[in-house]
Length: 187
Image 1: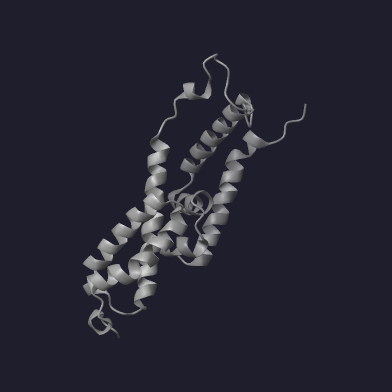
Image 2 (image 1 turned 135 degrees about the vertical axis):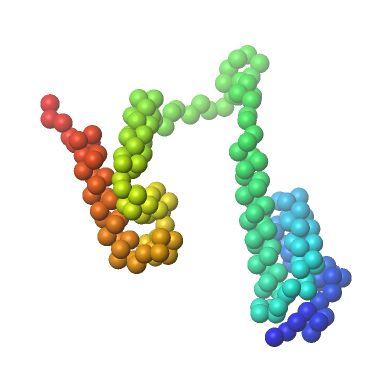
């Protein structure tokens, strides 16, 4: 195995030779210079601090690439969370005369549909809570969290066939419990 000593990776060499590569990758992933500069600085500081832990199991550029990708993705998630918290001023949508600026989009659905969907979701949630634990766990992980059966089996320490069986039974229980709410009524 190559070590950092064998590769003569010094902090100065890392900054000099790899900073442009880190910056370019971050810039491509994040789409702006400022964010790419922040990620580059974070990655280079992290790499220099952990340079002595680099075991040489992968080539240094490959390891650096992985660290940069992870940092860029984390930065993007952090930026998205910050932007979610921002509240736009509704008055920005109107000009001085009180007219709406730009195109007004119609509602994608009518309010009645939204209320019905909300009531259905509440009914389904309540029904899920009535499932016995062994079926509820599998149902939630598979149909709500969308995990694959193999991952559910590992999490719950079950075999994949047991997960499939429990999921099938949970779905049948849900269907039975909800059928009278969703059956078509004849006029």
